[in-house]
Length: 292
Ligand SMILES: C[S@@+](CC[C@H](N)C(=O)[O-])C[C@H]1O[C@@H](n2cnc3c(N)ncnc32)[C@H](O)[C@@H]1O
Image (cartoon, rainbow, N blue to C red; front, side, top):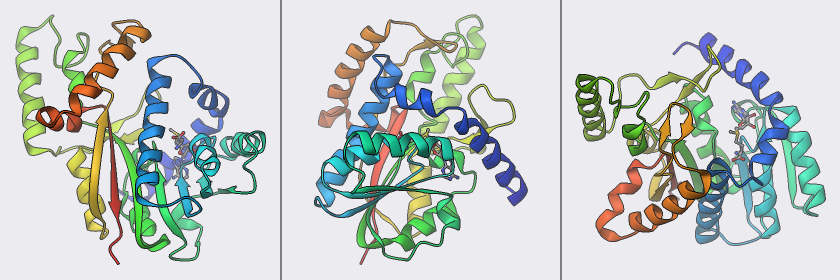
């Protein structure tokens, strides 16, 4: 991955997010499966922060967007700094902090974390939700996370999982395609191979429906390795979003049914016998710490 491609990709995503702030903010309030997934991801991240650091400590939210999670953490008593390269997202984040009455504990900085030159050892926790996928070469930002964390501080990072189980059931595009039985067979084999190796040859895929934009889809072990390379040690992980069964882009079941199914599958994945299932959710969220 050369620097020019990385830079171009970032600028294109920046443009994309500039136009997305209102929709992103509303996403947290909706009743769709998508909204439910965002709130669930936020809940998992906040549970991890609560579990490993105490209220009043300093949290950095990288790629904070409209600051929904930053503000929720500030409400719990954390001192939060959000960083984002979209000025429009941060305008909404400022408004949210003001409306929630947490502006004294929540501030936002415009920019990219590896270019801001923030003083080292500043934070007790860093969260990165829906952020790493936009960075094609994550090593510089992950090293920066290490530098910014106080010893024993934690990182909560989330990725979209390349080996998500649900893709097997996409009857239009996924490995479950019924029109071509031979295709089904090959895709299932490819998926099993991917799960077994827990790695993929092509870590970068084109993103969403925007031509030319690239998002990085990790497998859980790719994220773990990226973090280990920067010096982090893993505490634990959680996986969720097992139920987004789709035909092409559309959910097969209604949002309500999908959410019910999701609740059941999440419970199942928490039983010891099915714990491994968490590595196959669409969202993988893990907590790592910086050794002393
Ligand atoms: C999918 S949104 C997630 C927002 C937030 N973390 C949340 O969970 O609600 C991704 C955010 O990351 C920001 N972002 C993406 N790449 C970035 C970069 N290189 N530097 C700073 N912010 C970035 C985008 O502007 C956007 O607001």
